[in-house]
Length: 59
Length: 251
Image 1 (spheres, rainbow over the protein chains, first blue to last red):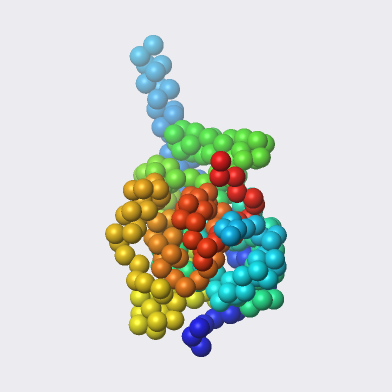
Image 2: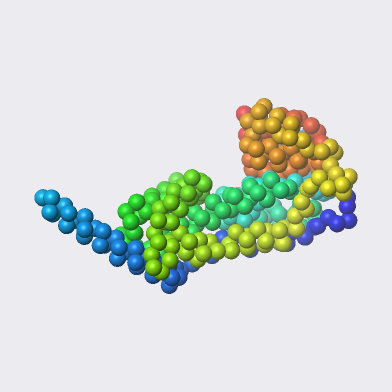
């Protein structure tokens, strides 16, 4: 076998990498993302109001 | 000659076939089992590899493993991020279609958990469907999809891959002159890849990984894929063997 072969699987390596992925589960939403959601919510409310108004007018 | 072995038989295998210590070829699903804590073989695969360190067995893979690993991890990471987004958001404030889709992946995940099935892993088409709904949401403070990727995904995929390479100490098989001389019996060929796809019904990634393994001097491949075990078993070559997490039922 060649001399440049690597043998360094480090004990516990799999669990250390799994931890990187599991961090996503605990990640809170940033202020910027919350701000976008707030704007979406406002637009959504406006849209629903408009739909209700049109429905009332039609009725 | 026994061709299919289990993790728990590794010591016996090394005693009977000491050349296994020259190197082991890894299939992608093994790397997923090693690095994803919701995988059903996570604990057993981690124990198996921790035991391998005592015998200093070098690990080999190729570029097909890298490509398939990144794709599966992308799907896992986006699924986790969307579930995390769902639990941190009031669905009632979202456009109805997006809210419905998020609620549906949450209930799918809960049902899988309850039925003791594999965790939810969204397909490429499902991730695209979320992208199409979220990318439409552009507000003065930013775009929902762009911000979601920047915040919840960010460099996770980079970190997972870089750490995997650094911590596992892979040896990448290639067709360089030195690799050919040291590890290869014959050069892998596309003809053989297409044969594996046609006559055994393998996916292109499985066929490329298997064809690389069949072209090397190494006797063992570790996999949790029935197709890989079945192929090794059918060839019935006493120089080849497959190591599995569990006993493989081929009949």
